[in-house]
Length: 323
Ligand code: MTE
Image (cartoon, rainbow, N blue to C red; front, side, top):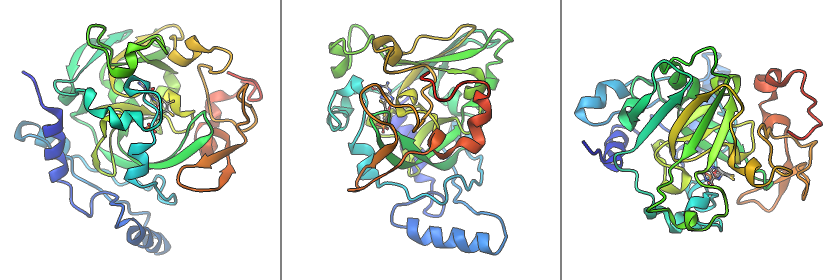
């Protein structure tokens, strides 16, 4: 039976209260509240929310979790986040994805799980989302093009989802693919700018890292199509192109999967692509970044500011080298 995701998500959103998510207008007020709760040593409180859907699904979306991840960051406005995009399937300039957003149809979305795991199959979006504890995490987002934003993502740890499919001992990597219908391509897929479908991949330990997120929303609302509805990856310590949008296929592999940008320009984009101010892109420096909506640039941080949490994953690798 076909499901209307938009309807599903609208119903989810209806159950969210102002106290549950980061509302742009309430953001400053809430930061004061967070600070004072921390000062009282009561532990960082962070807005929670209830995700609910249709009656049949509501029980599965009522998990809640407190998180203080990113409580010290100031998120960009929804307007910025949903207007300045890279989503080549929907066009090539920054505002094209918003203009062409309606070309992406998310009704009846399914995700195929394949490869080295005990539970391969085609899962509906509802199957994918059920059982998860949704949380908001405010992350820095750094594009390889040297611009950045701060985004309040809604979702859950990718690792929690992957475990459900029982990856086996041969599963060393996870490969992801974006929607691509050869007979009915999205506007940007009519040109062979990339070898469609858009593909990305992570090493298994990167995929299982608790910061790696499966995202379904921003500011407590469903993901706009131009931001990768209905389901995208977010890996905050890597350049933005690793955070693949509108995922339809996840495959556990024994060998390192091919990825779109490194296939298209191997000398410019590697498999790891960790944010690293000390390694320049062949055509520009990565030392600084332009903050969207600001006239100023800021210093780029090693692993985009998440080094304490992730540097151990790359022990033994020469971080001055391009990967
Ligand atoms: N995923 C797909 N399928 N297609 C794309 O073109 N662009 C990537 C990444 N994921 C892209 C994609 C790049 S280059 C960036 S910087 C981010 O999405 C941008 O995410 P945003 O538009 O939500 O800021």
